[in-house]
Length: 225
Image 1 (cartoon, rainbow, N blue to C red):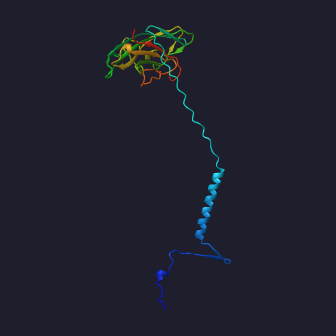
Image 2 (tube, rainbow, N blue to C red):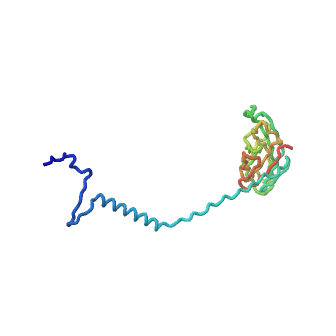
Image 3 (tube, helix red, strand yellow):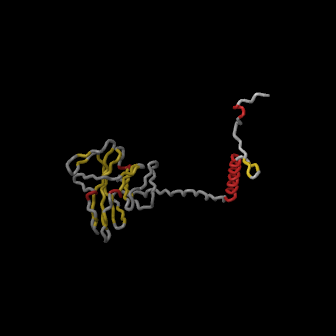
């Protein structure tokens, strides 16, 4: 008689169960679950392939090139323009390195800058009151840089920011606008601009051309006589 095998050698490596229902041997539950999941996955993939409808992707439209417009030919100092009943004349310009304020103090520019002064005359030629436009409707152009005016309050000089808010029919007013410009700028290099319906000419800092963002009226004067 052979000795019995050790206990550990008698255990199977994995449990294996067989169910007998009504005398019929069934597969193990582990194998049934795996077969059922596999069948469902295949059916799902087949259904998705059959029902999927291809979606047409519309072609991407190409951007329309923007038309580039350049500034009008500048007028000379002393010339007038007429915009909606308002006559505007740029009569005089000057550059200096300092000025005395109406309070008696002396003002000097920041390093690398100097002052440009522009004298404008405004006349209401219509029959209705005209609101005075803010100073942002004026610009000075130096190369490809657009400069905006600021308050001046120079002694014995009428400042634009101190004008009354309304110009009555037949009334004429005049005042000075101050710009802080680069110290290298000269009158021959500068342009003065009036923008009755916008606040800027859309200057490109990478080009000496001044393209409009929109087609608004723009009036330009040379600053040099």
